[in-house]
Image (cartoon, rainbow, N blue to C red; front, side):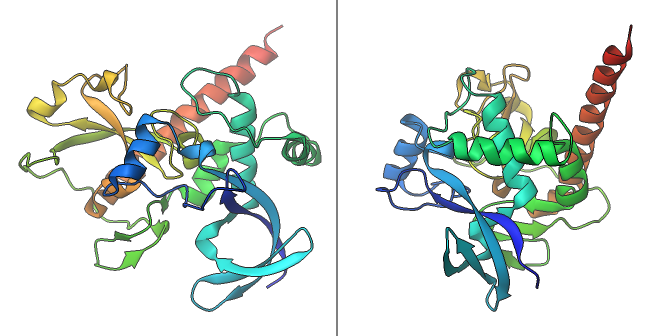
Length: 272
């Protein structure tokens, strides 16, 4: 393969151990406390650095060059160059805004990379809408270990299966598991990464809960929605694989809504 630009994940601080920014600490009490109570997740946990991806290697690995040094890493440690630019753009535009996790590592070097890309493509803003539509509509950005509807295991990325839409079957609340009613919203990973309601590099979905669960006001929880009291933002890995059709609908609706807002902005700019 010809070398291509990309990004590799690093710990946010040089003296801390690495944890993948998509990893939600479901079963580790100490890490869960650190992530959810102390806010040690998202850009406080991980940062990106520009690299050249030189070649693919067996075992879903690749060879990268970073600041003059080459090394082999798992493919899941890298992200597409355009996706990383969208992350930087999001961090720049939402800096200092309430409800967002700050990135202390977003420095002038990274800002310069972003500005040069904007200048190269002669645009004031990169299109996250176009990226989702072309790259993520049928690709799930997910957790470390997930299983698709055919029983195949995947790490961090997987193809969204195209099948007939399935309605949610009647289930039961049990322990910490609750019945889903519908998926009514979507946030792409570069937005979820620094959103205080999310904070992990996964696709996030706004899940409306069934019956008694939907009557609970989730707004006061760390992942609740003020607009939908009976709904909460959930990472992709928490949404069952058999609901891929609902994933596709949520992403498609997000793209349509973004396109409509973009058209309104253009119309206002053209108004004399």
